[in-house]
Length: 337
Image (cartoon, rainbow, N blue to C red; front, side, top):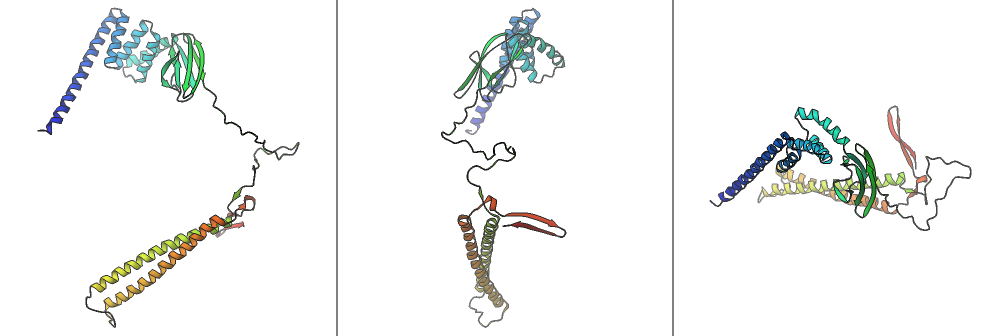
């Protein structure tokens, strides 16, 4: 019984939510019907208020369309164009209203003015000190009534302001962009010296190096260091494999000896004794190989590290150069060190 209690509570909660949604839908339908009656009576202001209440209770495309039309009828062109744009962004499907929408939009555009704002990305845009719902960059113009406006963009501790005015049907552009602060120049830094002689033109595609000549690894250094590192890694791998094989041979040999309690292989020529002898020889050989390979690999890796740390770096102008050479029947390298 205690396990059923949460399910009962959950079912009651779902039922309560469903009833509330149904109640809001019923109230929305009632307000919408009242708005349609007001439209038939030519009372467009009452219709606008009813449609606005209906849309707040349940936002649907038919209510939004009728709300925009009622706002247009009572001269609230700014509200009407904003709601009509929202209607069109909702991808309406009623062919009658889809065909009529461009005509309505044309009239609304002609009765409002439109501000195109350019501002820093992420900046808050303010219109007459009131924040616009979206931050820059804005994906549409700001539709307003004809008149004068104070614009501002804010971001962090930066701000820029501009005033503008526009007439009905006009689109104006307002730039709210501040200049980024340039990095301060180092005091006392001398101007770069020019290597061009008086009257001599410099090749624009060439930029001489500043300061000391650049340093890089010579080709010999690269080949030697890479070779030492490669041999060291290979030695380590061979050593690990050898010691692992020796360990395996030792385990197998012990298992065979354990299978012959009380017997000895001294002077015996049995197959098991021969195999035990072979395993011991293999164990000794692999162990020796593994130890030698690990020690040798460590020595070569140490040489690679020493090469990196202590090899004198040659100037770029004196470093070796290597290029591939392809010929008939051969592939090789050619170069100088």
